[in-house]
Length: 219
Ligand SMILES: Cc1cc2nc3c(=O)[nH]c(=O)nc-3n(C[C@H](O)[C@H](O)[C@H](O)COP(=O)(O)O)c2cc1C
Image (cartoon, rainbow, N blue to C red; front, side, top):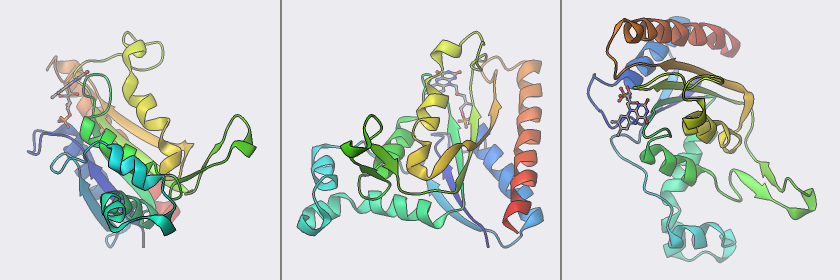
């Protein structure tokens, strides 16, 4: 049985959220292939993950054997989030673009799953690339929506796109290789014109197509 970790990060918790609707489309399509798929829901839009603070950093960098009860407590949410990734085959990430990057609640999630001793090791003996990811073989599906457009390479706003790099640079902490990142994107949301309507239709079609491609690989 496949396990999908479904992360939603839109602060819009109603059905007005495009990224939430794309997530539903993906799961509906997957269930045609595998009705019994297990879904873990992690809604950081509804329940944001707070940023890391000094106590968290000290706890994370203290040897597990030496941690106090308070330190263990500081790492509790991080442990839960990482356990969810470990349990998952697919990470389905609904993520709006906010101020050209990912929502703060999702950045909080990323910062708490990037953890020494759990999702990466650090060794200067490896030379210029001391970080080595611990998890592997996960697939990431990013379902995104933007008010503007032209964030693709060569596009009008390519230089402002802190969103895609913000996710892909950290994918290794989730056990995801670059070639295992799939995405569908809605654009022009703020223009509310026919380009937006076309973009919505195309993004839902691409989302279904990603599910159709991936689901048979897990049967
Ligand atoms: C706080 C906030 C910041 C936003 N920043 C951007 C932005 O920098 N660039 C952009 O193209 N759209 C931006 N938008 C528009 C959203 O990306 C767009 O409304 C998207 O559909 C939101 O996803 P959702 O429909 O799942 O909530 C922003 C929207 C909000 C609410």
